[in-house]
Length: 449
Image (cartoon, rainbow, N blue to C red; front, side):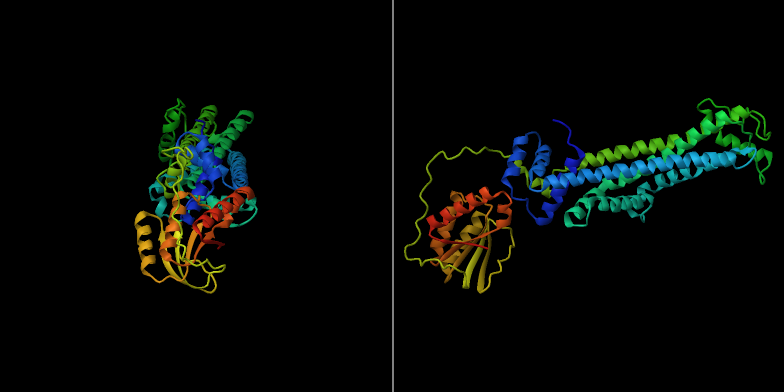
């Protein structure tokens, strides 16, 4: 199976959040069929279903535009930081004559190394700390992305939350910060190498407060890491003579800028990129989430449709004594939701005083509602059903049973026509005709909510 692209993962994650907020997956048989045809594991089918949902082409284009904007923003940060590093190194070398080695090293690596150490110390406490530079960059990136997206509608806001939530936004911001500091360190090291190669600088360890012994001690401490690469330090090179061992101290300065500036940031950037890769892989990967778990039965069915293999049994014959259904619902009406969500409220219809029986979606609730209809005095019965449901034999048989138990005019009330119409006019007309035929066979009226 080919790897799932980041844009597709983001689209699937966006669809999951939207469907979890709605409480149920979007009804689209064409998208479900596309996911099944894609084959592979559940994650691949979920991604393909998300791509096939109505409106996904525009959302996928928006995701790609935002990702391009994020790359442009990261590139600008890296370029500006690299130029700033080169300018800082050049200014430090030209600040005094002779050039002070501690000052140059302080400008090139001190703030870089200090912020890196602070970042490492605060990592275990990052969830409880106030927003820092990474969070600030994350927010600026999202503000920039919102402008690129061209608006603040609900779809764009939901997508931006998907980009910023979890580890994706955090590790992207960390990677950009480390890449910028790495560019600063590399730019400074390259500027030092170039300037020390074409100009003659007098380099010295200068001090006003410290004596020669303390200065030598500090020089030896800073020389520990460059010595690992075979660069001589204070143990062999003179510290207090301004013009001695000029070439040796130049190599030492270059090595120190690489060891204290470039290498730590390169390691931090590699770690952030690895965590960013893990965050990207986690998108659309946690199949235990409710939004994905609900799709398992749809996209990985444990049986295949074989079509009609035996003649349909005759539907229960409606009671002949039942009055004709009214053209408009009004007055006292018993109502129920067929295959609806638990706790679903009655529809708002003018002039209707509901006796609401709740949602009926299993054998127990079906038996209970039939018993109640037989015991109550029913003036009229309304059966609310989503238009996107398939009017199969089971639904037809139960509608007929409800009408017979009520012994009153019965109306089939179709809801969710917008979702059905989103599948196309041909599919809409065919499904409405199927419902009308079912209502005709059961002797009930049909109305649109």
